[in-house]
Amino acid sequence: MYAISVSFDVNPADEPVNVSRTQMWAGLVQKAENAVPFVSAMDECKVIERYEQGLLRQISLRGTSIRERISFTPEVQVLFERIDDPDHGWISNVLSDSDRGLILTFTFALAFPGVAAGSDEERQRGEEVRDSYISAVAATIMEVRRRVTAGEL
Image 1 (spheres, rainbow, N blue to C red):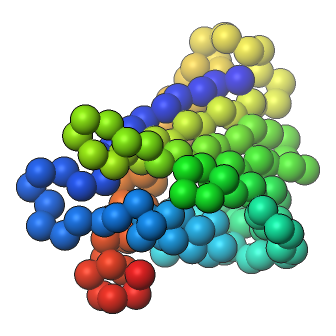
Image 2: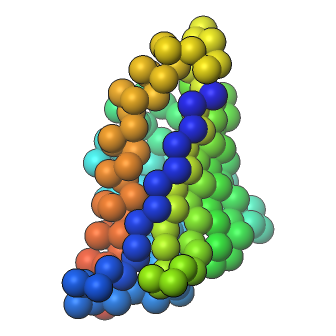
């Protein structure tokens, strides 16, 4: 399984609009419910079922249909688990505090069918999607900040 984590400051020093933990959390929940405005590679996102601490959704990502079970740990983590997908894996979005303030960390762990774990091929396949996953973190913060500025959060 190929895994990568990346962290971004939610409120860098040069950013005039600060986003609170509560606002960032609300944005992460909105992203779970409809990720299309947050993730440029996503064409479609439909909630299939809701349950007490999460939801089940169907997405179209780069033309591939994927079903995900999403679990919420309020104001801390959103966990996306791919189910019924040959490229199984999971993604977590975690809010944490640091000496610089609020941090958003995305961890991506993906398996590629027919590819040996730890192999050069796995690393290459992971690197092929790495940049789009990393850009999703920055895009998520930007979209939440836009919604805060617009009074939507």
